[in-house]
Length: 259
Length: 162
Image 1 (spheres, rainbow over the protein chains, first blue to last red):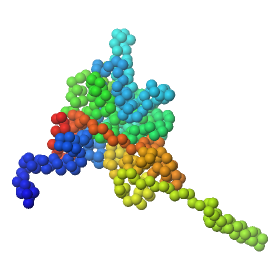
Image 2 (cartoon, each protein chain N blue to C red):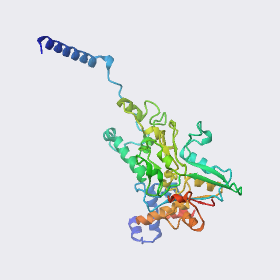
Image 3 (cartoon, rainbow over the protein chains, first blue to last red):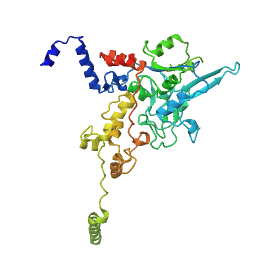
Image 4 (cartoon, one colour):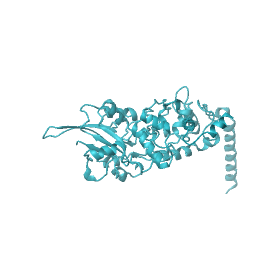
């Protein structure tokens, strides 16, 4: 009876109703450990059964003025997250997969040094997709360029076509050393995925960005370039940025400041 | 056909059928041992009926993989990762590390090669650590929720504030 009475007194914004709605949503998701303490799944970017849409375009801003000399944190974070062996630890360094690499450039005239990470630029018009004979190389609706390993035949046309040298082929069997979240295998081409497993989970960031921020450099910003309110859009509005090989008109997802 | 040839072919036929009958009955040529099907460590019931899964798991997985890779749909029901999470052996922690493990035992019996584990891990995902909710992630969720006409929960916003 007391339940019925309490229900009848609930109005749209009564605190009781709020508590009830909160409890129902939390228990439906099964996430509340204690009041106010939530598991990370709350941050889900999209419902699991929803496909990605072109309303979002993921992109990254690299601020080369903040990228530190000798720092390799983004590269090691990528290798840890995605399970590829770093080039220095590889038995065959020339064949080793490299999803992201650190470049240190020097102007021969002024001796000015520039540091920057180079990886798949997630082009809006990706040449790797154009040349792929099987359709394995594709661009997801949200702008992430991926390789469908189920259809990749390892011909490496895309590696030739990429102006950024961003892709690598897995030459050797990996013997079950892959991460459960990141399948990858012999005979397939691979590259930076913008940590698609994290993005789909709703983390809204990538391993390299997390590492760069944790190291205090803040040289990398990841986010939705289609959303004028996202941090990356705000920063892109303020900072002068460049696309590498802008002459190719590929409309890149990775923009550089200070190069 | 001559009478002699007819007799020969008749006798050969008899011989062949005798040999076949012997092969079938002989204990030395018993059928291959039946696969050992390890019970799934977690969970009572598979996501589909067992009979259906035995015949059609490959179709279910192929359909789901295209949805996941191309469209980014990551439902758990037909995901290979969830199969592995449930069916990994308690001994080896894997679905394909030893001959008794769930996937391998049947596939050896049926003599069908599995390609899945050239690329996919055979082990379940270790329990993930709690991740801090980033402002960007929450912002993205908020936007999608607005598009779908679904409100964002009080807890979500509380998480962002923290």
